[in-house]
Length: 113
Length: 113
Image: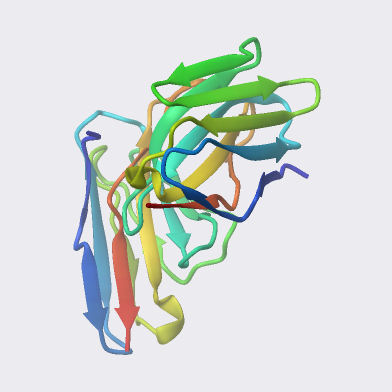
């Protein structure tokens, strides 16, 4: 069964600190993995995309990693800011299937001053 | 900023009313999706379309219906709203092919009283 699991479910950190969010998946055949940021009451916005051959990709203070062998990805946020408070959703695409997008439940990050 | 729009952003209606949630995109995307998301929960696919006159039900059973008469529009209709329909509804679109990004609208927050 194609599944995407994220941890932790929620996280509270102090402004300026770093944090790492985890995503494990069983989606097959794998096409790509995206991390989305969803602010409260808004639609998700893509942060990074990882394909099978990519191990790491950065977007400003966000760095995503992918281990296609263990089917794990992480999103590392450096020097967190209050505006980083949001839900971070891991979305894995399969190469085949009528509906090929599989969503994780998200990690709710709260950055406090 | 993605060119996909949802209206209304917020809607409070009485039980039994018929409502239509609008979704429009100006990117020429063939694929469009409707997701339902309860607060703090994951997104669930309720409808999707691969192009004009193509509509399919998603993983989550829904009493809503959709239509795709034009590429740009993918409205969702509830014939008789109930309190159990209270939720956030997110529309998304993407190009066909692998490694494409799903762009999300801002969402419609529906409350049925």
